[in-house]
Image: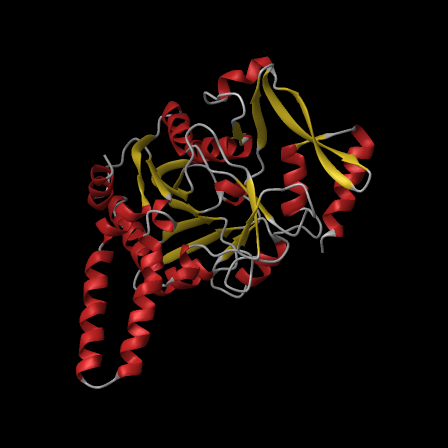
Length: 357
């Protein structure tokens, strides 16, 4: 698979010289033979996300989404839009959680391979946000999508900010630096010499489109946050890689997302935003602490009954679920909640934001 994206990348460079990093990333991840041509998530893939770690994540998220449905006045059907639905792991569980609610589930996913998998579920699988009409009442959410959207890689140097382009040197792809356009300097965070930023125009376009098409609703974005400098890196077989230019198509390419900046942009388009909070705080506000306590009790009951194997399984499942709240790992993910101007904040979200002050 590694040679498939390399061909179009090389052709693009041969056609018009070094290409912006965002174009390289687009081809490496989403082009023919690219990393996301088939779902790469899961234990047998290259990395795992919260829904793959333990089903309790979806249960907690369902509580959050249900509170937003109530905040919208319980519309029927309840239109749920998942951006970056991947292999459908999260959608499958959420549909189970919402069996008692009339849900219209729209799964937006760029990967054709993933859309084939999603087609096996009772969802509307779409390649882009264009499937959503204007003047919508809906809840839109995305889990670890925005850090994979193509971005421009900018490095601060003694000569000023330089944009990374990708060129070819024999069989290798190499970084070529060019001056960042002066008219776009305002888009960059403050950077020291040697620091880098990831500037995603596509992330901005998505937020701006959502602000324009939602008449009544909420947007929940969950991602690795990064205000200021960003670490551009990749994932291959659950290992972090630093050289994101080698073997395009065989590794993910990612960087933290400036969710605060996206929230400010949404505000300028008349949406409301709640300050970001950690996944650890969000899940605590949604009841995961009580769930852990219940699981410990069940483990104790199993031990008292002499059901050692069941007790071990209970312990292992709880231990795995604890990864969701580990502040050094998935618990450090940031949650950004936006709403249209006419909506209030769910109580759990305010508790989570207060806990993160």
